[in-house]
Length: 70
Image (cartoon, rainbow, N blue to C red):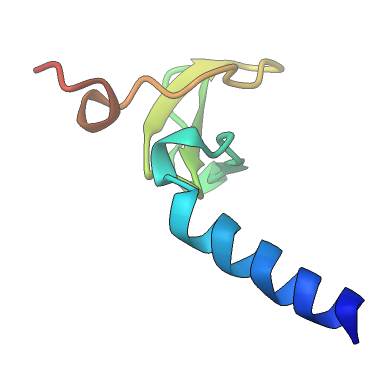
């Protein structure tokens, strides 16, 4: 019983204190939007969109909404 209560409390604390900006980006490729030899990726976590050279994967979000720029 104590384990169940502890898990519930842990879940609630994570839900309360977790911030979207702290989540790691999860890139998804969209081949329909590739152009000029570049691959299009969109982050499932924050919505950032980038074009990168063929064979590369984005390493971080470059979405101005996350950094407060532009």
